[in-house]
Amino acid sequence: MDIINGHFKIREYNQQMSRFNNEMIKLNGNLIQLKKRLVSESRVLSSSLCLLLNIVEYEHNVAHLLGVNSANNQEAICDWALDKLVDAGFPYESCPLKKLATMLEIELNRLLLN
Image (cartoon, rainbow, N blue to C red; front, side):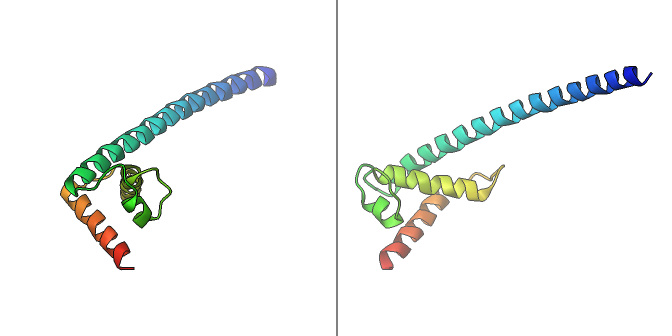
């Protein structure tokens, strides 16, 4: 009887491990999708912020001000926007573009004064 009980416990354990493994694969896929979505949204936001604030995307003045090692202003603003999205947590409330632009202007003005 003990051998049969042991066999069924092992079988049940293997089934549970299989379920946990499948759930981990699913969660990992969801995490990858979330990261892609956040990066995509930050790129769209950075382009919009450049247009809204009349920032030349391919210059380096904003990147220099923000103190990031980015190739250009758009990438620097993209990193900044991504930080804001991540700081808001998930699920995050969509931040109106105008509010985000104001936040970026305040940050840039603060950095200019220092």
